[in-house]
Length: 441
Image (cartoon, rainbow, N blue to C red; front, side, top):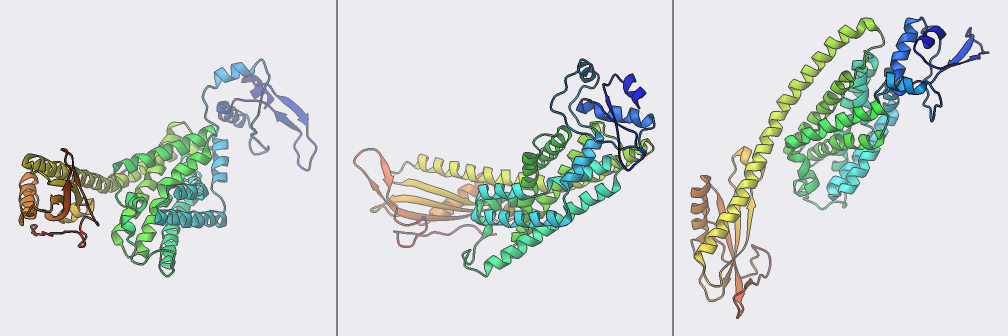
């Protein structure tokens, strides 16, 4: 052993050891983090393995004339595979601890979703323990540790199923209390709607979280904050899926489940590729070729699954773009018609378009609500809704349903025109002429 350290130019100190075993001495030597793995391989080749203990400890400061040469010899920032293996084991806690924190974080996240509180949702992510299994599964695959890899996969799958089930039970219980109003439509809550309309950008969030998790473990920095990022990609959509089941909304449940599955796959894929490209290999050299083939097959399977699910994200992204474009173009077109008409005292107060991505996918017609301010002495056109309907249908080649509401407008002495609105856009207590002669399929 000492001869091997001399050949590698490593300083060392030898202490006599007294204990129960047959060990004769303890040897301590400083090595840069990126050189631990190489030095350990040389010592293993020298015969130091089964009959010794090896403990890797972090050091604050090393004063040595030879340490600079070692740093030049071992450039880089990544830790050794021994340290990576040990850290991955620490990140995957005992089952009781893991599921306790997971259930608590899911309840907090579900509460944040119902309250539409981003701060509460982020607070739940601090508690969520999902970073460990996501990282340990990839580390186990790269280092040929089947037990670690399988436990990481099992904890992820069971953990997410437990999160969905917890949110579902929590949602059912809340509906039997006075904590939420009866008939609450969770789809109208922005934080929930954000998770039920996933798009391709969600995939980049998951890929970035997986890469950040792998880098934080390899370089030993910021693992807590990165764990929050991974949890953000997994726990809120899982809680959304559970709430969808609780409120009897299969669309919400499926959308949340699709988002959480694709995020889970993307995190594992990015971490697996990064660990492998960083040069981590199994302890046993005989297993390296087999692990290489195994990792290639894992990457292929996960990649195909992500590609299939990405079609769903691409469809939602396209539908979101189309509905947003229709809403903007409708508002511009109606405003242009009013500007061209230039009728004194008549003002376009508001245009509201109800057209969601799900409506486009299911073939439902968009509904356009138009509120017009009109003077008291001016007769409202009885066919205005149909005229708007015909114009929009011709412009966008799409059937629509148009509703037009009228409110009294007052015109001041100057050129400014201001609508005086009493009540909501379609409040019957205002002067209201409701025309709903829209086209129906």
